[in-house]
Amino acid sequence: MNDLYQSFIKNERQQQLFSLAENLSKKIKERAKEADRNAAFSFENLQDLKESGYVSLTLPNEYGGEGISLYEFLLLQEKLAEGDGSTALAIGWHLGIVMELRDERLWDESVFKNIAGEISKNKKVLNRASTEPATGSPTRGGVPETSAVKDGRSYILNGRKTFTTMAPALDYFIVTAFMEETDSVGSFLIKKEDPGVHIDPTWNTIGMRGTSSDDLLLKDVRVPKERLVELKNAGGKKSAKGWLLHIPACYSGIAIAARNEAVRFAKNYQPNSLDTPIAEVPHIQQKIGEMEIELLKARHLMYSIAERWDQQPHQQEHMGPELAAVKLVVTNAAYRVVDLSMRIAGGRSLSKEYPFERYYRDVRAGLHNPPMDDITIQMLAKRAIENE
Ligand SMILES: Cc1cc2nc3c(=O)[nH]c(=O)nc-3n(C[C@H](O)[C@H](O)[C@H](O)COP(=O)(O)OP(=O)(O)OC[C@H]3O[C@@H](n4cnc5c(N)ncnc54)[C@H](O)[C@@H]3O)c2cc1C
Image (cartoon, rainbow, N blue to C red; front, side, top):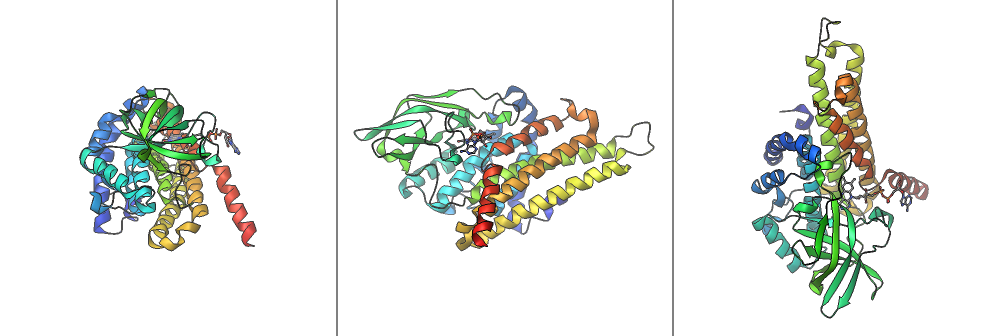
C-alpha cells in the first residue's frame, strides 16, 4: 500500500472501493502511452470500467449504484488518474454529472430513473457538451449558438459543440441550446443514435490526448419535448458544485504518478561520477521534499473540503469559493510537482521512453478546466471585501 493514499483511507468500505480503483489504475496505465500517441480514447479502458461496475458508482443504491460520497469519489478518481489521466477525466465527467443529478434532483425523476437503469444495467455513459467555439468556457456566461426550435411536440437542434470529452464512446450527450421562443437556455438529452448526430474528430492537442474531446455536430436533430431535461444553462439548483472536484483529483493523480516515477528514478540512477544513487544528493532530496510539500498541502485541502461537503450539507451552498480554491491550488501544485519530477530525472525526462513528458503535457490541461484561476481569485477577493 502506498502511504500517499493510506492516510486518506478511513474505513473498510473506502479500502474496498480504493482496491477497485487500484486494480483499474494498473490496467489502464498499460494503455496510456498508446492512447496518447494516437490521440484516441481507449475503448478497452472503458470496457474495463464498465465490467467492474465503476460507471455506476455514483448512482443511488436504489437505482443500482453505490451512492458514493464526494470524498470517496475523489479517492477513486485520484488513484485512477495515477494510471491514466485521460481515462480518469473522461469517466470523471460521467460519474460527476450522475452525482450532480442524484444530489440536486435536476431532472424529472422518471427520466433520471430511466437513465439510471441504462447506466447500471446496460453500462451506458454520458457527458455534458456545453462548450462552443464562440462562447468559450460556459462558466463565462456566454449564450450558446446551438439552437433548439420548437416544432409541435418536438425540438429541432442545430449547432456545434467543442471539447466534448469521450465523444466517440458516449451514449448520451447533455447539450445546452438557446431557445428563441422563450429567450432561454435549456439542456437537452441527445442519444448518439439520434439522426443528425455526428462526431467531428478534431481533438489533436498537446495534453490529455486520450480524452478524445472532439466536436459534436447536431444537424436538424429532432428530440421529443420530454428530452428538454434542464431549464438553466448547464447548471443546477446549487451554485456550488462539489462534484467538479473530480478535476483537481485527476490532476493530483497525474502528479502522484510523476512523483513516484521521479523517486524511483532517483533511487535507481547512479552516474559514474557518484558512489551512490542520485537520491542521496542534497539538491535531489530538496526537490523530492518540495514535491512532498506541494502534494501534502494540495491534497489535505482537497480532502478536507470534500469531507466538509459530505458532512455538512447545509453549508454546501456557501462553499463555492472553497471548491474553486481547491481546483486552483491542486492543479497548480500538480503542475509544479511534474516540473520538479522532470528536473530530478534531468534530460531523460524529455524522452518518449519515459512517461514524464506525457505528465507534463497532461497536467497543463488542468489550467483550462473549470473554474479558471482568474475567476477563483476574483471570487475569493470579492468575498473578503464584502465580509469585511
Ligand atoms: C481536457 C479538457 C476536457 C474538456 N472536456 C469538456 C467537456 O467534456 N464538456 C465541455 O462542455 N467542455 C469541456 N472542456 C472545455 C472547458 O470546460 C473550457 O470550456 C475550454 O477549455 C475553454 O476554456 P478557455 O478558458 O480556454 O476558453 P475561453 O473562454 O474562450 O477563454 C480564452 C481566453 O479568454 C479569456 N476570457 C474569455 N472570456 C472571458 C471573460 N468573459 N472574462 C475574462 N476573460 C475571458 C480566458 O481567460 C482565456 O484566457 C474541456 C477542456 C479540456 C482542456
